[in-house]
Amino acid sequence: MVSFHAGYVNGVRLRCDARIVFMADNYQPIENYGVIGNLQTVALVAIDGSIDFMCFPYFDSPTVFGALLDHERGGRFSISASLQNSRPKQMYISNSNILITRFLSPDGVAELVDFMPISLESTSDKSEPVHQLIRRVQCVRGEVKFKLSLDPRLDYGRAPQSIKRVSDHQVLFLANSGPLRMLRFRSHCPVRVDDNKVTAEFVLRSGETALFSLDSDPEVPDEIDANLANTIFDNTLKFWQGWVSKSTYRGRWREVVDRSALVLKLLTSQKYGSIIAAPTFGLPESIGGGRNWDYRYTWIRDASFTLYALSRLGFHAESKAFMRWLEERCRSLKQDEPLQIMYAADGNPNLPETVLSHWEGYRKSSPVRIGNGAANHLQLDIYGELLDSIYLYNKYGEAVSNDLWSHLVRLLNWVCKNWDQPDEGIWEVRGGKKELLYSRLMCWVAIDRGLRLADKRSFPAPVSDWKNVRDTIYNQIYHEFWNSDLHSFVQSRSGNTLDAAALLAPLVRFISPTDPRWLSTLKAIETNLVDDSLVYRYRGDDGIEGSEGTFCMCSFWYIECLARAGEVPRARFLFEKMLGYANHLGLFAEELGPSGEHLGNFPQAFTHLALISAAYELNRQLGEGK
Image 1 (cartoon, helix red, strand yellow):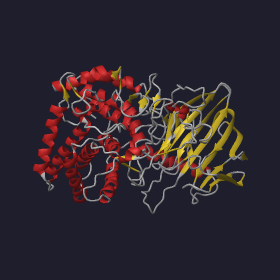
Image 2 (cartoon, one colour):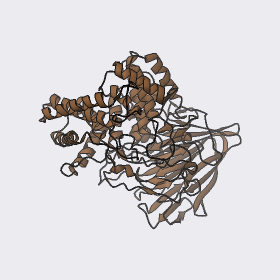
Image 3 (cartoon, helix red, strand yellow):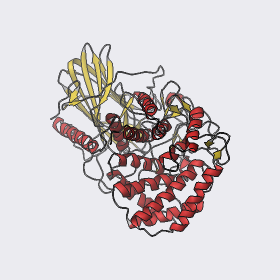
Image 4 (cartoon, one colour):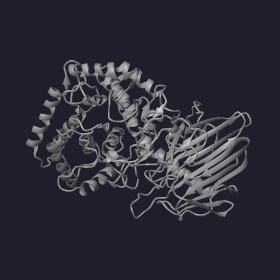
């Protein structure tokens, strides 16, 4: 049985932070949120206890709560404590993705616990996991009055819906269109149905609790049983703490690294083995701007980087599951057809980009897009990230199968024929294709890792042809992507634009981190793209209106490059400064604005995987082993 106390749960210390900001326009800052999930979807919980974003039942399902993107029409699930001079705080139970929101006042203390149960047995298409959100409130001290407001808007708020009151404690939300036709709410407290939403007010005294559940599963019992809820809580806590305890990382910043690993795990699909880039869509790269994209999909690049980070920490099961997913994608390819750069979590390649015109967008940042038009881009770099992660999986995880190798040979032969094409590149610019340094660099990585893998496993491969192409790419990068005036490698062939993607060159062992050409490139990037510890991706026209903030992943890449170049004290100083930009729970969005505000989709896998890599390298340089 679980008991909840201020400061500790089951003897485990809770992390908390009082930093909180509210906006005058009713939108919470992106950094005011925590995340919970069940390896099927994720919900964003604001520091005031309101769930303002949740796609349900899967990552890329339509939202049932979308107030983060339209506070009037998006829908939310709010539970608040009516305490004078209340100070909310938020924390995770240590080493878990179970979130506690605490309300503190001289008149009383209350806690709200949010989590989604994890299906402990492996799932398949024939064995559907439970999709459920559980919210538990407790009065810790005094007597506290609570207010509840449940206002889901199914299918991004597009579906006409009705409410069916089953009893004083159970309500059904019904829609006549969209993929989700029924959402069931169950409550320990009597509820009212007013103006198509559910409300309740209730009082708890010290030690008393109340439970609330939201699900779409008819197999879940009608009644909320407190003992069953405690068992589910225990199992969920055991899952998260058991998973992260398998990390082999024992160095500095372990708590930060573990939190980032837990974020990456939240973004993995237990059902399919795929990994999404971020659980949100439409969050802007600049307030009021139009750079608002949908990241709820599996990018080959982002997933490969994620596997690389998790493998460094000793997590290999995620790579094994992803390899199964990847083989399915390869089997569906036609002769000489390349991989698509991204897919839905279930492998669907069709991701048409549309606009939710009825939503105003986060702080009026429109348009709000779902789907992603970049799915049809040509991005040659994806093969480098993919082959690098597979090479490491074969080295540290399990041996690559013959079937997977045959698919890889086909992909590598395609790369050898197409590596010198112009493409949209890692940053998915929409200003036309270019001959890009990073794409060439990662094609070199793809072929290099393929050659290493063939040699290590004695796999059959056209080794001579691959070596010739690898060396051709190498020479082209050195002769045609080097700007002698800038003393730097540049973004495009014979160009003069700097690109932070070049920071990967020493990290993928294309060039020594102390090579004179690299050190001068690093200096040029510092001069043109670095602002204190923060790094811009590039500067210049990319075919998209508006500006953007600094890119957190690039900031961590820059720090790792400094460490590898021998500037360890400086790298450590900047790393710890970057950690100060995390929110109160240690979470990062994609970008940072001019005042350190979080921008872009949240939390972002890119940022957290780069954080892990930088911490790992810094820790190694400091002589701390793992």
